[in-house]
Length: 351
Ligand SMILES: [Zn+2]
Image (cartoon, rainbow, N blue to C red; front, side, top):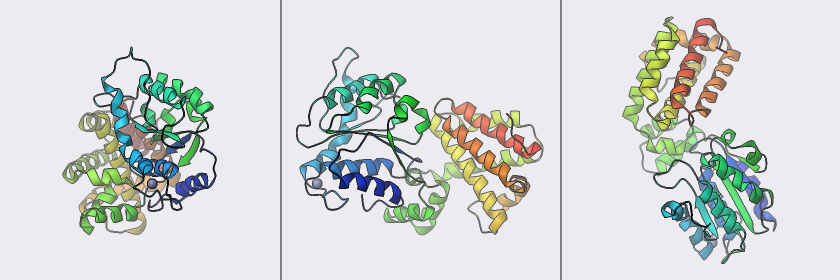
């Protein structure tokens, strides 16, 4: 875990758990998408079962370390079985995720975890299951984990990983020890992208667009990004010229809300644009937005920055819309545009 950058507080909290012989409590790793939660969960699991750990770092070669590397396959074991099947036992270490062609983590998968936790580990001293993304547990699946989370066996470690902790039932969430992960700085994302072989220029553009998400920065389609920016810029411009937000909200949701992932990316992008506008007014730094673009939006920038309290409320509001993307991407995008329209027109937000 020592080589994981930008998450020093989380690593320190986990390191303290490794120092004691006690089994870690059930954990909730939460923080923005693409900031290293899953990598850290796997590194922590390896450190817990490694027979030759040095400090915080697993050796990478012992059978425990190999077991953790193979853990990814566990999530697919269930995909062929039927709902009538009895719970099946997982290996000592497993990563449980959404099976191929499914959209949620099912109650069957959750029951398998609980069932597996009832027997002592075969090979290692701990039995470790990582659930990711935990916000995609069905309500029934989350519910069925409660007892195991409340009274875990002495050898059992559960790690729930999510970018949307608010989407977990509070009954489950409140029983987990939180380990919080931060958005990565652009500098850290740039370093990772450079190490992957990207040019300095491309690494910087991607890091900036991705707002601290390394996975997003690595996958980003820059051309599509440029088109999406143009769409948002046009919407912001028309809002600032007094056009009604309702029609523009529908246009935005048609452009962006085809699927949850594109809705979320488009809202993340809107936050980036607003952040750039704020930065340009304060520091006059050259932006990744084209120079002409920031001139087109100077009216928007003034309105947003005129009242910094209002801007904070707006960003909160947009983040709230982001949180809802899982349930209804169309409403999330429309809600964001209506919120913007409210700020630009009246300096306040619709209720
Ligand atoms: Zn090892």
